[in-house]
Length: 224
Image 1 (cartoon, rainbow, N blue to C red):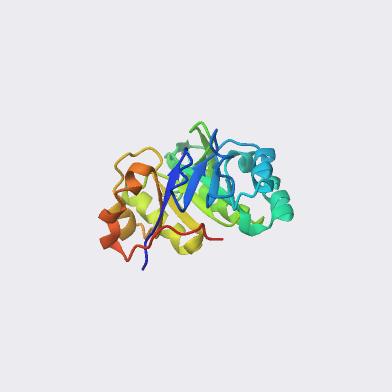
Image 2 (tube, rainbow, N blue to C red; image 1 turned 90 degrees about the horizontal axis):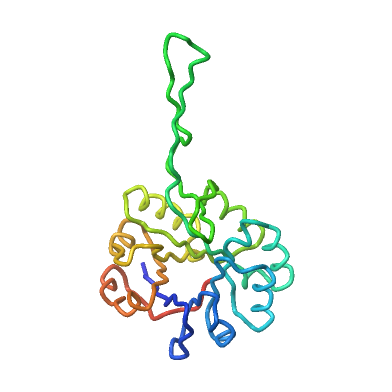
């Protein structure tokens, strides 16, 4: 299966044919050139202004967490193919509680989760407790298309969660490392089943190192 690569940066590069660009000072310069704009903490109004200016697609983060209706409103104005999600995640911590009421002779230890899951993070990196898989599904029902998953896929648990999300979303899913500067991308491809990688410039320049994991193509437009 083909592995696709895209450059993810906070600086617009006119020499880059296809680029995911974090919102910032150079965003307006490349409004019509980038495949997608990533808006971790930008408002609905900012997303709308970029779309009016000709942005091909915006990937909305915390604004959709605070008000899921913004996805529906923007979809109604600009169409599904121009709206997506930016989803930073980490493994949701498991809490344990003791239940002693039903039987005084013993204590029952109960986990808060039956199975591992990712939680969606706020723009500042703090947890929300919101299950990523569920939230992405809810936003897709409202019209969101492309999903940029910002994750450190470092453990077997992460790899399993990633593979499940790839199976569910297919070409709608792009994955990018969150904090790990040297992510094990070969494992992401082999075991996490990742097929679309949005990489920061330094890693993007090294993409040939992972071409053996699949028949990698040149960068492509963000899929809707």
